[in-house]
Image (cartoon, helix red, strand yellow):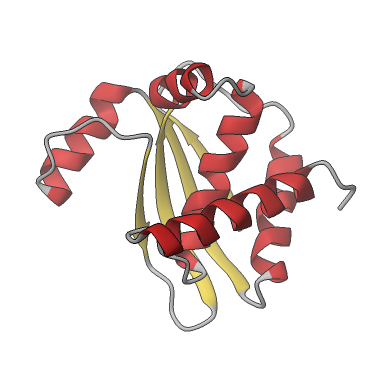
Length: 139
């Protein structure tokens, strides 16, 4: 089950389409969907989470808390819409594309993908694009 929470004015249009897509990502990785909470927020909200739980005094686009048990994928994914908007401009991609990338990124971490080394980051990027492409396919 995918649940969308909003701590900012941003709101997804057609939440069911996003939920179906997230479920399809998890299934495509041979995993089972548990409860995944997406919390859309602003920089200040996510910075507070970053300081309180990770002791990082930086802005970031996403923080995920992994509650997975085996192949059951569960967790909380916090996304700063301000960072997503800035990243979209910086990387010259649409806001929609950058949002999909970040949403997929959190779930891919739960599926076991890392991004600490160059090799891991390269694979993560490939998987993100693969999952973004799935969004535009009828589920």
